[in-house]
View (cartoon, one colour):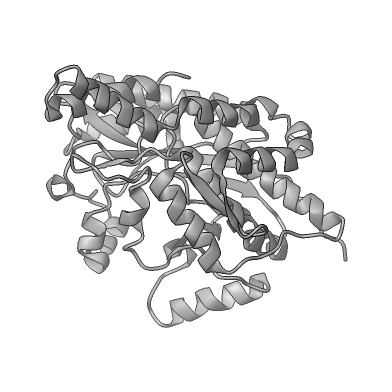
Length: 378
């Protein structure tokens, strides 16, 4: 029996950190009126996040990248406008340059209370933000088949999205420190291979029966079948500071899935490598972003990131044309040319120090840059 072609509709979720415009530190106790007003204007597209200093937005189901752009512009713009009335601003970065997790508190909500009680210090350190991209793959077994294949490409997307070089005021030496924090949680990382959706369901049922989780939403892999929607949800990447870059990551993920489906229709598939191979590239993307190499496991050697990106872009050219997102895909090369958010943050910090600023002032300048860049494409 033939499998119906996926619709490849998409949705994007972004998590913002709220900062005090005067101190540039995190708003550890933002007024409840802020979220209430955002909810009044945006409805269910905005929610509280685990930390009180965070706010999450999510688009409706979008037919294409143009609709996703329009919605994210509205979401970022509204959150910024409302936050501004309280002397606050959102920043789209996966870590704050100098805030300390010990000074934060989690949102008073049953789900988050349970997480804090269960995960203890691993949860208290979750002062991180990410972005998630959902792409509709309506057939459940096809969803699993494409999940097995697409995970090979996720480090390529992580490298392009990096926005978390600082942690607690320290230059960590990593372009994406966020994942080192998130990986302390259980049920994270690169998923293993599954032969069918039924096999995946049996795993979830086993965990539920053992009293370990309530449902599949407590599985936090880098890519997972959504427990709520008929989508394959990508979760590995940092949040992109510039909205244009968010849309590029979403377009790349969507086009790669389209390419893999197209190969399947020709009785071809991407080779599925051991999880350890994908994790090695994941680490290299965390450490170096786009500035070094990833491993081409087909060749068995390290290759400059820009060369691998060019190869991916060539693979997905027909899909970008079919899905009408050539501009968003082309922006990937612009990111490489100017640097990711992590690279830019480090440069702002270095320039401030070279200009005579002390460490605290230099880090505040990074926050100023993040505030401005978060709204650049809005």
